[in-house]
Length: 176
Image (cartoon, rainbow, N blue to C red; front, side, top):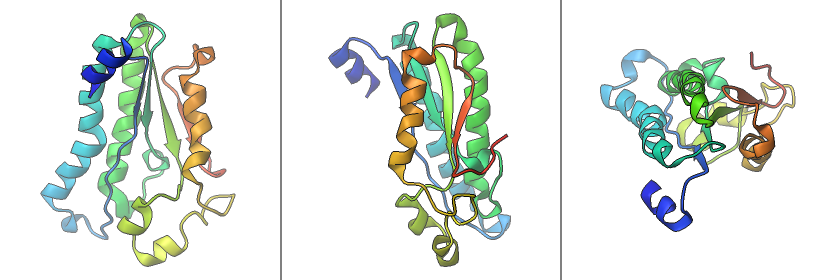
């Protein structure tokens, strides 16, 4: 995939890591080893390997944007595996930003709060789906399009002094 982008476009300027797997469980004993591994494989291991493959093709001014979650700061206990990987993404972003600074590659993250995607009704209990988003000050779930400006801002060359940070798009819920 990365080789094709480099071949077609002559390089790689922006990498956005935005893939996730989540499943809800009431008790840690209900999380199978396979489920735990799958969540880490999709959410953090894939990100590591994509970045590792992309960086040799990036030059100064390139940008990596990772998708974290409000769960990296305030983990939802029924999403233990998911929240744990989102915390790992937060740390990966901060460490990678420092590691790649000398190459002039910026690394940041976007941390969405409750955003209405197909993942929500397919992975959360019915009661959670009915009340999804009501817990934030704006009293609603966000739409995926409402995240776009955060990614665009982080990709913009005028954000050249922004690296190692997380932009929270959380419906008014503080992210510290």
